[in-house]
Image 1 (cartoon, helix red, strand yellow):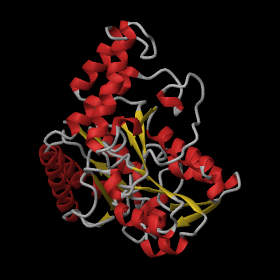
Image 2: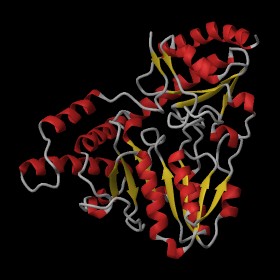
Image 3: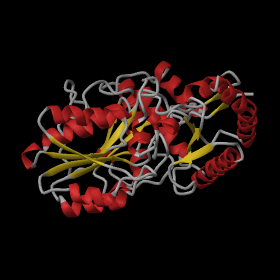
Image 4: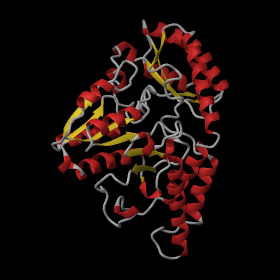
Length: 384
């Protein structure tokens, strides 16, 4: 049996997504900037996807900028937002648990002369609002937080953060990395007070290499990729029509029967968590099960190194993660777990299990059965 529990790293494409990607590569393959019929056909896919996303977010389609994925969306928001608004101030705020696609651009901005404040989180991985409120200043121009933490599934209070930002620092724009949240929550940026929102396609059963950045039309952002002037000059380069078309289909499908899908993922999460707690020396990390995101469960299997357990499960057809797929290959403590104040022994024994609507209770039961078999063996081995 095979059980794929690494959906926060990437998801399997919906068949309908794969079909439209193939169609736009082999039949409707025109350049959307071309003026002939083939170009018009291709441009319609781009426009239809923008309209789909705009409807889901309740924004204007002109506020949707297609990118190569979540990393580029974050970079455009951070570098473009900071550069365009530097005359208004020089202070940027983010949190201690951001993905590297936010953390590293912020480090670069600090090297470029911006002043940066890193706000701490509590033991659940949730940003401390008191610390954020204290950090906000008159010269703050940009605040960036994630919506859902990619390692432990902690959900940030984005509406409260937005309120604080706009009350305490009226010149500042609020950027949200929603890469683990889009498709798991109904997100309405204008209602929530979010000025920029990053989304990645391959987390919602869409193709890799495509995403988008929502930019409120009142926000000034300096383009970072110049050339042909596509997307109103905000992101030059020939539009990735197959990716954009696939993203539009995936977004529409992931929000179809949405409540049932989220209920299913929470039930899988609770079933797995209950099974974990019947095993000796297993700790659950992050928020309470129903408070955290539906698709992510972090657990520490004390006395067993995460890499060893990960590969033991892999040998039995069970696929999980030892952290973010973008950073788990690096031999260093996970940033989120350290920021939560977790001791080294617990950090080093932590795995992330992440679900999609496609996972089944049979897969969860198989995983629990295998863990019950291998954990005693691995703990005995580690003591010798």
